[in-house]
Image (cartoon, rainbow, N blue to C red; front, top):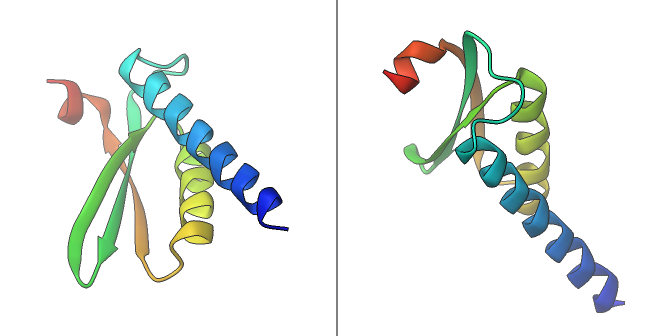
Length: 85
């Protein structure tokens, strides 16, 4: 029974690794708008990720909420030039 859970955890980690790789190589859907996802724990910013699309950010939040349901997430649209200037 635990074997299935371990496979799912490895799959989730692989998904996160590919997401990071996509970000650092510029991704394929670069636009004028980027999506900032803030992860908050105990009222403090815990992690901040940037995404090319809102769908990517929402998919990330859904995956993370499965693994860490006690954390809060927010998604906000920002101009890409604020990030890359």
